[in-house]
Each structure stands twice: as structure tokens, then as C-alpha cells.
Length: 252
Length: 285
Ligand SMILES: Nc1ncnc2c1ncn2[C@@H]1O[C@H](COP(=O)(O)OP(=O)(O)OP(=O)(O)O)[C@@H](O)[C@H]1O
Ligand SMILES: [Mg+2]
Image (cartoon, rainbow over all chains, first blue to last red; front, side, top):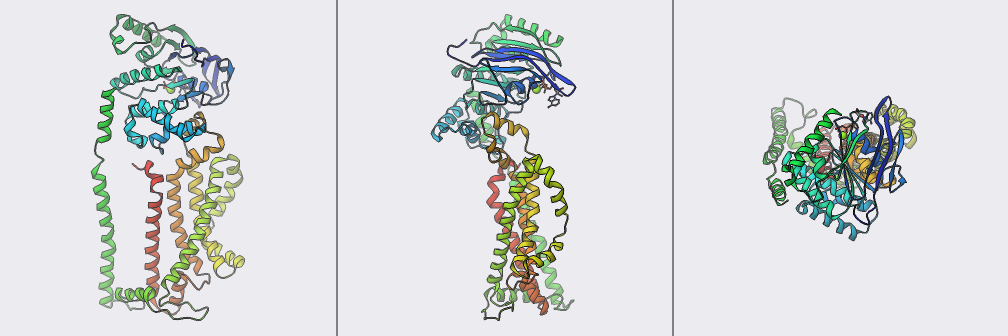
């Protein structure tokens, strides 16, 4: 745990039903301050629904969401969420997209400009400040979506399969980029994915969800240290853990 | 990382599609072809005297009348008489002013009511049936009522233009605002946008491309309604000149009016498109 970082996100007994359809069935989880919690689950099990409830976009049918012990309702800049499709506004340039959050929270123009410039550099998109989202590649758009949310410096970041639509190599580069980015700004991250390798590469801990209705079937620490790069992919321990987790997911 | 940067730079440096640009250029030239052919046909028909000049004046007569309309020596005329020679700019100015004032009012009212309908279920429940019923009333059906309420002249003309221009804006705004993806609204809320800012930060910009289409349609309709409005007894305006010309049997002056209407309508649409281009740029392929 990183000293001085707040942002413990907890779900306790979260249940969510859409009419007759039960999607979340008593999900308990805790994302520790400054750590990455990977949430793995089969397609359609309710991962996006879980994140939407945590973000405050959906009311839970029962149960509660707590940030540092305080019960939450409704969305807030404290929990930055990057949706599966990304969150860039197509009518704004990259610069204005990154400025959206700081402007909404009424920071001074100088502060906004400083945050935006810093994030343009951090995303390697300096040259694209005036480009529209449609003029960016898929990888660039995902980086920009994450940066847009980080502009508010949220203690908690919720990521819904942020790299799911990218090719394998780009995804690996994105993983390294994200880990470098988070190293500089300690953030509690809840990363939803169906990619076992991604969950193990990025997560400090791992939660496995069952098929719908989703509940936590297993929770385990990921033992490869903070500084794992893509070199760890060839590590026999990593390969064995990946195979074991994959078995669990397929059985879930 | 540097590899990713390189790739991004290459993506961005790739030249835009030149094919679409060439095509757009080709279209414009083709668009001139048909009017030129028609002009040629008109010339042939009138020079062979296939039709009486009362039905179809020659292009030359019309061109002369057009010059006369805008550049002739104006003579003072009695009140109630609609002048022609040298009165072009006066008539055009009157029509443009009438149209502009009514159109701007229609845009303002249409935008506000459209936003209200698009954003509020309650407003939709209250107003939708009434507005849909009113929208189905043909424009000409408003004319007698406008004449009773505002009398012959300026007021009735403006009322008719306003009604004609209102619906396209209102419908475009409420439809477009109702179609704004909830994901954008959620993202804006999550990023800390207060509810009262949503319409300006999300709904309006997201709806603008569709709204601009509505504005263009509305402006075209407003300009079309100018003639309807000016039939209601104004003595200045291109439409007023045309009905006076019809009464005195000056077909070439009627055709001058048509040429003026067409040209101004085309130019106004081009200007509006240019003025709004930066709002819709993001939505164009
Ligand atoms: N607003 C809603 N109304 C009704 N049903 C919904 C709603 N949102 C989600 N569902 C249902 O909840 C279930 C879980 O959906 P969800 O999107 O959370 O799955 P997921 O795990 O994110 O899937 P994927 O891996 O494909 O992204 C689905 O059966 C879906 O139909
Ligand atoms: Mg999902």
C-alpha cells in the first residue's frame, strides 16, 4: 500500500436486478488504496454492470458502495470511469476533451492548461492536441479516454475492458504505458477484463466472477511485484498461474 | 513507447483521401451543366418564337429588366404604387429584413421549445400532441387568420414567415436532443459537470449537426414564405413587386423576381453553411 493515499473502494453485498434478470448476486469486494484490483469474468456475466453500479450510474438493488468508508450515491469526479467504448466527446478536440473535467470543476484557466499539457505529454499525444477523436487511432483514443478521466485526479479509477478492442501488440504497449502512468500518480484502480494475461500483468490482486448472476468465486494476490514488465510473460510461474486462472474462468 | 509514438505520427501524417476532394470538385461543375442547358433551351424556344413573349419572355428581355430593376433611375412613386425601375435594392432589402427578423425569432423560439421538449418528458407529454396537430396545418391556412389579427401588410407577412420557419427548427432541435447518447451525458456527469450545464456542454454540441440541417431547411422555408407573406398586401418586397408585375402583365419582371429569389436563397444557404461549418465538422465523414 502506498503511504498517504486514500481511495479504498468497497462493495458490500451488491445486488443488481434488471426486472426479473438478476445480474449481480451479492458482490463483496475491496479495492485497496493505490492498488490495482483486476476483476475477471466471462462475457455477459455482469462486469460492466458492476462497474456502472460502482461508478454511481446505476442504483444497486441492494447493498452499498463505500469510498473510504463513506456510502456513495450517484456519479462523481472521485470515481473516474472509462467505459468500454471510451468516453471522448466526438465534437471536442483532444485538448478540449482533456480539459472537460477540470473545466467542469471550475479550475482556473491556467490550472486547466497545465493539467492538459501534462496529460498530453503523459499520453504521448502532444502533436494531436487539436485533433478530433475520429482522427486518432484506437490505441490513441484509449489513452486519451483514460487521460480525460485522470485530469480530475480521481482517487479511484474504474476501467471497463479499456484495451479490449486493440490488437495484441498495441495492448501490451498500453499495459506498460498504464503501469508507468499509475506509478506517477497513485490511484486505486478497478480493472474489469476478460483477458487473463491483462488481469495478471496489471493487477496487484485478482477477483474472479462467476457467470451470471455474478458473484465473487475467488480472490487471490498476484505475486509478481510492482515492477513486472512484459518480460514476466516468459516466467514459468506466470505461465503456470495464467493457465490455472484460465481454467477457473472457464469453469466459472 | 517511442515505437507507439512513431506509429501515431505515421497515422497522422498519412495524407487525407484526395479522391473525395476531387469528386466534390467534379460535382460542382456538373451542377452548373443542367442550368446552362436549360438556359440554352430557353434561348432557342424564345428566339424561334415558339411561345408568345407574354408566356415566356426571352432571356435578353429578362436580363434587361434585371438591370433595370437594380440599376435603373428610380422615380418617386405614389404611395400604394409598387415601383420597379431602380427599386431592386429597396425591394430586396425589405424582403431580406422581413425574412431575417422572422427567421431569427423562429430560431430562438424553436430552439428553446425544442430543447424543452428534448430534455423534459413532462414537456413532451404536455405539448407534443398540440404541436403535432398545429404542425399539420398547411401554411396557407394561417394566412386568413394572420390577416385578421395583423391586418394587411407587415405584421401578417412576418407572422407567416415565422410560422413557416418555426417547425423545422423545433423538430430538429427536439429530435436531435432526444437522440443524444446517454453515455455522453453520463461521462459529463462523472467528470463533474453540474446538471444545469449539461444542455450547453453536452446536449447542444452533440445535437448541433442535426440542428444545423434544421436551420438550413428553416431558412429556405422562411425565404419561401416571404412571397406568401408579401402577397398579403405589402407594397415593398420582391414578392410585392412580382404580384404587381403580374397584374400589369409584365412577365419579364415576374421572371426577374424568380431569379432574385433563387439567387438569394442559394447564397443564403451557402453563407449559413459556411457560418456553421465548424459546428458540424466533427460529424462529417
Ligand atoms: N440497462 C439494462 N437493462 C436490462 N438488462 C441489462 C442492462 N444492462 C445490462 N443488462 C444485462 O445484464 C447482463 C450483464 O451485462 P454486462 O454488460 O454487465 O455484462 P459484461 O460482463 O460486461 O459483458 P461483456 O464481457 O460482453 O462486456 C446482460 O445479460 C445484459 O443483458
Ligand atoms: Mg462489459
